[in-house]
Length: 338
Ligand code: KG4
Ligand code: ZN
Image (cartoon, rainbow, N blue to C red; front, side):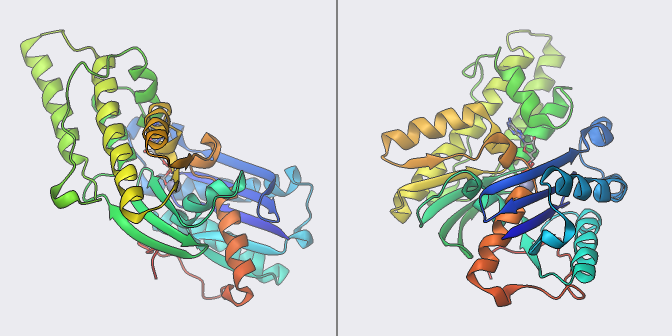
């Protein structure tokens, strides 16, 4: 079964062709970092316009790389939400047009489901497992009991982890997107140089909060500017900030695994590409007898392979699950739990 996946929920224009759920024939991703860099974050109108300019070439490239013809495609899986509506609509309308003209089934996929299942592109994980989805828009903990069965255990109350990386990178004038730039800067800094606050929240909550940490970084920078003291370098601040985020993410994932009596965990989404997070989570998991899985970095950041993968499993479970290509619509706040 050949699935064409299409993803345009934020600022990556992506298309992929996937055979039988885990044989990836092509995975084309066009980022827009250069479009948004000078604004320090994604500008929705510019993202939408950029998707429009590229979507056809990207889909064609995915077919060419896969040596597939239009008529070889058995299913089209496309991100229907959550995300920026001006971005979502571009991929969705392209997918609907293809499905309509080829008379092929189409399935609208929740972007987060793509992240949670992205691990199946490279290996099989036994259910149930806990999934930490950490991206620019989300910091969510889920119990994944089966394909299509997700229970939310915790989520961010304010900034997402990736968003806090992006905002702190902006304060340090590192550029955009902030995650990889903070990680690089942190390599030459001391993670114990400054003890930033870790928000573990009340009553053992599995929710997250990163806005206090962001404010604390702003205060430290302001103080450094005003007093002229040079004890903390930018690298020290980057490393200490990263350590605070990673500590909380790792601790909450392990707590959730114990509470749910689950022995398998997956960390997915853009922030899961972070090397320090991988190290810390792996160490904590080992100590607690938990097996943890990380998708390859290219499957962590936004891509269409994970959307094709989620579409494949959805459709295999229930062929009637396909959507109507005339009425399928974008949902910027689409929830994962039904
Ligand atoms: O999953 P993703 O590509 O897009 C969303 O769905 O949001 O995640 C993008 C986020 C950005 O905030 C980016 O700064 C962050 O993931 N990110 C990282 C790293 N690579 C990407 N954060 C920390 N360390 C990284 N190496
Ligand atoms: Zn994402």
